[in-house]
Structure formats: structure tokens, C-alpha cells
Image (cartoon, rainbow, N blue to C red; front, top):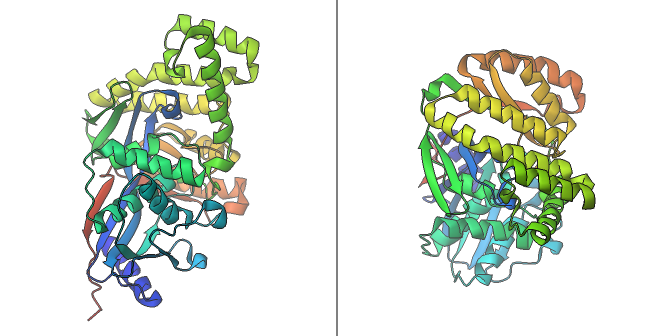
Length: 411
């Protein structure tokens, strides 16, 4: 597959007059979170893996002082071309993906990094349009590319994560947390990534059983979310920030993660019920998901993938019923998956509304799951009958870089 992608990138560069021959290809992954989904902006621990849906960015420095980049996924936008130091404000780019290279350049300059060398680049991605962190993957890839062509070395991985978050929050206008960036940047093949926000630490935890026994599956509904800034995610985030302020004033809690015992949950729920009753369900989901987190982590360490799947399913029900952030196509995929023997757990992924659901299954159940989805989903959502997809994913390194492979037929 890598050769095919490299060939595609090279052919596109030739077609549009971009010089990437002899350059590098940076590959950034998607991610699959086992918990706590939506916990990152509420001060909670995180655990997940990098998965093999990718963005590939082939690039080579140029002497033009310009960024020239073409996306295979958005050919209608043509070549995004701008001089270093002349990135524009997001309003001028409307809904174009060009907001990301412009945003990365502007944020890096704002943060004091010197950018004197531009580059030619072509990118291609196969990450679903919501749920597996396409935007975080793109932002990380571009940041690392700007740094590489300019000889900038940043040893602190969390600084890279922070910069990628800034691109989305400060430039794109998407109120994201750090879950996606952490799970992609620090991902290692065969390992789960555990982030402790109180300590600011990253630990890589191997699965305690045979990883060949199970599969992580992406259930891409074919729908595309326009962006977190235009989604239910923003509403939920605002509700959580409001609850945090209310509970800080009443009990001194610095984050919703501090609602961590039955007693605290009871008193916090009573207060929220009195002053912001519509948000009670959000607190319920977060409390229960956080309570399951240690169990999930221990199950992964010990190789109990059935327990990981059970908790994944329970989180999904909470996201659907209490956090109320799923969508009809996402839940159709979950309902179909639940009907298939060998599926251990399933739920919507990521920011919600649209995009992909995910499932954890016994390895031998994949063919049955795939055929059931293919025969059932189009009947439920005919508008997406040619758009949906199901992928069995591997755990992978989040960020890799390699020389651009020469096209076999090119002299």
C-alpha cells in the first residue's frame, strides 16, 4: 500500500508542477480512544491507540519562501500557495481545508518560531470524515513538516501537542481538547497510550494477551461532520465549562474529574439539578465513564479484551443517552454491530454527530460483521449506500517519516 500511495503522490506532484522528487513522506495516524471520550477537556485520564487510517504528506523544501501544497482529498481547492509570513485569517478561507496550512504557519510564527524555508507538498488521507481525528492528524503532520524543513527541533512532545491544539482552537475556531493530538503523536504500535493529566505523563502499556485475538474496527458511516465548531461537541463543551464553574463556586472543584466518588456525585448532581438541570446527564456520563476507566486500563494490562469491550459498550450507551452526542447513522452502525456474535463492544467515536463508529471484536468475527453491515446499513441510510466503509485496523506508530519511494515506471 505504501508504494501505491507514494506513486499517487508523485504523479499528482508531476501533474501540478510541484517538486517533491527525492523528498520525504510523513505519515500521521488516526486514533481509537478506549476512555475517557470527552474526558480531555474535563481533566480526566485518557487511554487509546493509534490506528492505521492515515494522512500521508510528501514534501521537499523549496527556495521560493512559499508553501505550495495540494490535497488529493480536496482537488477542487487546487494548490494552496502562500508566502511565508503572509498566512491569512480563517474568515478569508471560509470552509477550505487550506485553513490548516495557513493556521499552522500563523500559530508557529505567533509562538516565536522562525520560518524561513518553504516547501512543496502533496497530501492524501483515508481517515473517515469524523470520529478518528483527521484534523488533529493533519495539524500534527503540518507542524512537524514546517519544523523539519526549517531545521527546528522541539524535544518536548507535549509542546507539539499544545501547538496542534492551538491551531484548532485559536485559528480554526474548533474548541477541541488534547485527546486526539496526544493519542496520535505518542502512539506506538502494539501499545496503548495512557495519559495522566495530573502528572502530565505518558505511559505505553502493552496488551497483556495475544493482540491477534481481537480486532479494532472502524465503521465509517459515510457522513462528514463540518467541524467541531459547528457541532454538538461545542454545545457539550460549553455545558461542561458551565458545570465546572458552578461546581467550583459551590465546592471548589477545579474540573469535573474531581466528581470522583459516589458521595461527590450525589451532592454535585443535586446542585446541577437545581441550577442547570439540562446538564445532569452530561455529568452522569462523565462520572460513570471515569469510574470505569481504571477497570479498562487493568483489563488491557491483563489481556481481558472482553472487559475492555464491555466498558467500551457501556461508554457508548452513556454517550448516546446521557451525553447525547451521537447521531442516527452512528447509532445504526452500533445497532448492527451489537447484533453480530463476536462483537465485544461498540460506540460512536470522537466529536459526535457524524463520521465513524467503532467496534472491538474477536478476530474471527470480522467477516460476519462486514457482511452484516454491507447488507443492512444501506437499507437504513440509502443516501450513504455508496459512501460507508468498514475497516479492520491495526495499532500503529502515530508519526513516521520515510524517503519518498521512487515510482517504478519513472526514469
